[in-house]
Image (cartoon, rainbow, N blue to C red; front, top):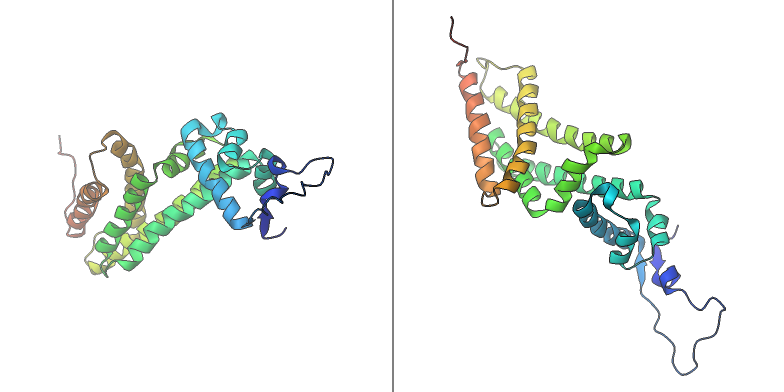
Length: 240
Protein backbone atom coordinates (compact mmCIF):
# COMPACT_ATOMS: atom_id res chain seq x y z
CA UNK A 1 0.00 0.00 0.00
CA UNK A 2 1.23 3.52 -0.74
CA UNK A 3 2.86 5.46 2.06
CA UNK A 4 0.43 8.32 1.48
CA UNK A 5 -3.32 8.55 1.59
CA UNK A 6 -5.51 11.17 -0.01
CA UNK A 7 -8.52 12.37 1.93
CA UNK A 8 -10.46 12.58 -1.32
CA UNK A 9 -10.45 8.77 -1.35
CA UNK A 10 -12.32 8.73 1.95
CA UNK A 11 -15.98 7.88 1.38
CA UNK A 12 -16.94 10.90 3.49
CA UNK A 13 -15.40 13.12 0.87
CA UNK A 14 -16.25 11.07 -2.21
CA UNK A 15 -17.23 12.78 -5.47
CA UNK A 16 -20.68 12.59 -7.02
CA UNK A 17 -21.33 8.85 -7.54
CA UNK A 18 -22.68 9.61 -11.02
CA UNK A 19 -19.37 11.20 -11.93
CA UNK A 20 -20.90 14.60 -12.67
CA UNK A 21 -18.22 17.14 -13.63
CA UNK A 22 -17.43 19.95 -11.24
CA UNK A 23 -18.82 23.38 -11.92
CA UNK A 24 -16.84 25.21 -14.59
CA UNK A 25 -16.93 28.37 -12.47
CA UNK A 26 -14.38 27.16 -9.93
CA UNK A 27 -12.53 23.97 -9.11
CA UNK A 28 -12.38 22.73 -5.51
CA UNK A 29 -8.85 22.84 -4.09
CA UNK A 30 -7.04 19.52 -4.10
CA UNK A 31 -6.85 17.98 -0.63
CA UNK A 32 -3.42 17.57 0.92
CA UNK A 33 -2.02 14.07 0.72
CA UNK A 34 -1.53 12.74 4.26
CA UNK A 35 1.37 10.30 4.79
CA UNK A 36 0.17 6.95 6.03
CA UNK A 37 2.26 7.16 9.22
CA UNK A 38 0.81 10.56 10.09
CA UNK A 39 -2.75 9.35 9.45
CA UNK A 40 -2.21 6.30 11.68
CA UNK A 41 -0.79 8.53 14.41
CA UNK A 42 -3.89 10.75 14.24
CA UNK A 43 -6.18 7.73 14.51
CA UNK A 44 -4.24 6.24 17.43
CA UNK A 45 -4.11 9.58 19.28
CA UNK A 46 -7.90 9.76 19.17
CA UNK A 47 -8.38 6.06 19.91
CA UNK A 48 -6.29 6.21 23.11
CA UNK A 49 -8.55 8.97 24.44
CA UNK A 50 -11.74 7.12 23.52
CA UNK A 51 -10.59 3.76 24.93
CA UNK A 52 -9.47 5.46 28.16
CA UNK A 53 -12.81 7.27 28.52
CA UNK A 54 -15.23 4.51 27.52
CA UNK A 55 -13.29 1.27 27.95
CA UNK A 56 -12.60 -1.25 25.22
CA UNK A 57 -16.12 -2.63 25.01
CA UNK A 58 -17.81 0.77 25.32
CA UNK A 59 -15.65 2.45 22.67
CA UNK A 60 -16.97 2.52 19.12
CA UNK A 61 -15.02 2.72 15.89
CA UNK A 62 -17.69 5.14 14.63
CA UNK A 63 -16.80 7.66 17.36
CA UNK A 64 -13.06 7.21 16.80
CA UNK A 65 -13.51 7.78 13.06
CA UNK A 66 -15.64 10.87 13.60
CA UNK A 67 -13.17 12.44 16.04
CA UNK A 68 -10.28 11.61 13.70
CA UNK A 69 -12.13 13.25 10.80
CA UNK A 70 -12.26 10.18 8.56
CA UNK A 71 -14.75 7.45 7.74
CA UNK A 72 -15.18 4.18 9.61
CA UNK A 73 -14.04 2.10 6.58
CA UNK A 74 -10.80 4.10 6.53
CA UNK A 75 -10.09 3.12 10.16
CA UNK A 76 -10.49 -0.55 9.22
CA UNK A 77 -8.36 -0.02 6.11
CA UNK A 78 -5.48 1.25 8.22
CA UNK A 79 -5.80 -0.90 11.36
CA UNK A 80 -7.86 -3.93 10.31
CA UNK A 81 -10.21 -4.27 13.30
CA UNK A 82 -11.16 -2.79 16.66
CA UNK A 83 -8.82 -5.22 18.41
CA UNK A 84 -6.07 -4.35 15.93
CA UNK A 85 -6.59 -0.68 16.70
CA UNK A 86 -6.44 -1.33 20.46
CA UNK A 87 -3.27 -3.41 20.06
CA UNK A 88 -1.66 -0.60 18.07
CA UNK A 89 -2.58 1.87 20.82
CA UNK A 90 -1.27 -0.48 23.48
CA UNK A 91 2.04 -1.18 21.78
CA UNK A 92 2.71 2.47 21.02
CA UNK A 93 2.01 3.61 24.58
CA UNK A 94 4.01 0.70 26.02
CA UNK A 95 6.98 1.61 23.82
CA UNK A 96 6.75 5.22 24.96
CA UNK A 97 6.65 4.20 28.62
CA UNK A 98 9.51 1.70 28.38
CA UNK A 99 11.51 4.19 26.30
CA UNK A 100 11.01 6.92 28.91
CA UNK A 101 12.22 4.61 31.69
CA UNK A 102 15.18 3.24 29.79
CA UNK A 103 16.23 6.61 28.40
CA UNK A 104 16.22 8.26 31.83
CA UNK A 105 17.94 5.31 33.53
CA UNK A 106 20.68 5.26 30.90
CA UNK A 107 21.40 8.99 30.88
CA UNK A 108 21.39 9.85 34.57
CA UNK A 109 24.72 9.30 36.30
CA UNK A 110 26.91 6.31 36.90
CA UNK A 111 25.56 4.89 40.14
CA UNK A 112 22.76 2.31 40.02
CA UNK A 113 20.63 4.14 42.58
CA UNK A 114 20.71 7.40 40.59
CA UNK A 115 19.79 5.57 37.42
CA UNK A 116 16.96 3.72 39.13
CA UNK A 117 15.70 6.97 40.65
CA UNK A 118 15.73 8.63 37.23
CA UNK A 119 13.91 5.68 35.64
CA UNK A 120 11.21 5.58 38.32
CA UNK A 121 10.77 9.35 38.10
CA UNK A 122 10.31 9.07 34.33
CA UNK A 123 7.76 6.29 34.90
CA UNK A 124 5.67 8.26 37.39
CA UNK A 125 5.94 11.43 35.30
CA UNK A 126 4.72 9.53 32.23
CA UNK A 127 1.71 8.23 34.17
CA UNK A 128 0.92 11.71 35.50
CA UNK A 129 1.28 13.38 32.10
CA UNK A 130 -0.39 10.64 30.02
CA UNK A 131 -3.18 9.39 32.22
CA UNK A 132 -5.21 8.14 29.25
CA UNK A 133 -2.27 6.03 28.10
CA UNK A 134 -1.86 4.48 31.54
CA UNK A 135 -5.58 3.67 31.83
CA UNK A 136 -5.33 1.75 28.55
CA UNK A 137 -2.10 -0.02 29.55
CA UNK A 138 -2.76 -0.80 33.21
CA UNK A 139 -6.49 -1.06 33.81
CA UNK A 140 -8.05 -2.31 30.59
CA UNK A 141 -5.55 -4.45 28.74
CA UNK A 142 -5.34 -7.24 31.32
CA UNK A 143 -9.09 -7.88 30.98
CA UNK A 144 -9.05 -8.50 27.23
CA UNK A 145 -7.78 -11.07 24.71
CA UNK A 146 -4.62 -13.20 24.91
CA UNK A 147 -2.94 -11.13 22.19
CA UNK A 148 -3.52 -7.94 24.17
CA UNK A 149 -2.39 -9.53 27.45
CA UNK A 150 0.77 -10.76 25.71
CA UNK A 151 1.59 -7.23 24.51
CA UNK A 152 1.24 -5.92 28.08
CA UNK A 153 3.43 -8.73 29.42
CA UNK A 154 6.12 -7.93 26.85
CA UNK A 155 6.32 -4.31 28.02
CA UNK A 156 6.39 -5.40 31.66
CA UNK A 157 9.24 -7.84 31.01
CA UNK A 158 11.28 -5.04 29.39
CA UNK A 159 10.88 -2.77 32.43
CA UNK A 160 11.50 -5.67 34.83
CA UNK A 161 14.76 -6.59 33.09
CA UNK A 162 15.96 -2.98 33.30
CA UNK A 163 15.13 -2.72 37.02
CA UNK A 164 16.67 -6.11 37.82
CA UNK A 165 19.86 -5.07 36.05
CA UNK A 166 20.11 -1.91 38.15
CA UNK A 167 19.48 -3.87 41.36
CA UNK A 168 22.18 -6.39 40.40
CA UNK A 169 24.57 -3.50 39.74
CA UNK A 170 23.81 -2.14 43.19
CA UNK A 171 24.53 -5.52 44.75
CA UNK A 172 27.80 -5.82 42.81
CA UNK A 173 28.89 -2.38 44.05
CA UNK A 174 28.54 -3.64 47.63
CA UNK A 175 31.41 -6.02 47.01
CA UNK A 176 31.99 -9.66 47.98
CA UNK A 177 30.39 -9.22 51.40
CA UNK A 178 26.95 -8.52 49.88
CA UNK A 179 24.22 -10.71 51.37
CA UNK A 180 21.99 -10.68 48.25
CA UNK A 181 22.06 -12.97 45.23
CA UNK A 182 20.79 -12.77 41.63
CA UNK A 183 17.57 -14.39 42.83
CA UNK A 184 17.22 -11.64 45.42
CA UNK A 185 17.75 -9.02 42.71
CA UNK A 186 14.93 -10.57 40.67
CA UNK A 187 12.75 -10.62 43.79
CA UNK A 188 13.43 -6.93 44.49
CA UNK A 189 12.73 -6.02 40.85
CA UNK A 190 9.33 -7.74 40.94
CA UNK A 191 8.48 -6.11 44.26
CA UNK A 192 9.56 -2.69 42.99
CA UNK A 193 7.69 -2.85 39.68
CA UNK A 194 4.60 -4.20 41.44
CA UNK A 195 4.76 -1.38 43.95
CA UNK A 196 5.15 1.20 41.18
CA UNK A 197 2.09 -0.20 39.40
CA UNK A 198 0.00 0.01 42.56
CA UNK A 199 1.24 3.48 43.41
CA UNK A 200 -0.18 4.85 40.16
CA UNK A 201 -3.66 4.20 41.56
CA UNK A 202 -2.59 5.84 44.84
CA UNK A 203 -1.40 8.87 42.85
CA UNK A 204 -4.81 9.12 41.16
CA UNK A 205 -6.43 9.30 44.61
CA UNK A 206 -3.84 11.81 45.82
CA UNK A 207 -3.46 14.30 42.94
CA UNK A 208 -1.49 16.66 45.19
CA UNK A 209 1.40 14.16 45.28
CA UNK A 210 4.08 14.88 42.68
CA UNK A 211 5.97 12.25 40.66
CA UNK A 212 9.15 13.50 42.37
CA UNK A 213 7.73 12.95 45.85
CA UNK A 214 6.36 9.49 45.05
CA UNK A 215 9.67 8.44 43.51
CA UNK A 216 11.64 9.60 46.54
CA UNK A 217 9.36 7.77 48.99
CA UNK A 218 9.60 4.54 46.98
CA UNK A 219 13.39 4.78 46.72
CA UNK A 220 13.63 5.27 50.48
CA UNK A 221 11.41 2.25 51.12
CA UNK A 222 13.20 -0.08 48.71
CA UNK A 223 16.77 1.08 48.15
CA UNK A 224 17.51 2.09 51.74
CA UNK A 225 16.01 -1.17 52.95
CA UNK A 226 18.07 -3.15 50.47
CA UNK A 227 21.18 -1.29 51.63
CA UNK A 228 20.61 -2.43 55.20
CA UNK A 229 20.32 -6.03 54.04
CA UNK A 230 23.53 -5.64 52.03
CA UNK A 231 25.22 -4.59 55.26
CA UNK A 232 24.14 -7.84 56.90
CA UNK A 233 21.01 -6.75 58.72
CA UNK A 234 18.05 -9.10 58.52
CA UNK A 235 14.64 -9.08 60.16
CA UNK A 236 13.26 -12.20 61.79
CA UNK A 237 10.15 -12.70 63.91
CA UNK A 238 10.81 -12.80 67.62
CA UNK A 239 11.11 -16.27 69.08
CA UNK A 240 8.23 -17.44 71.25
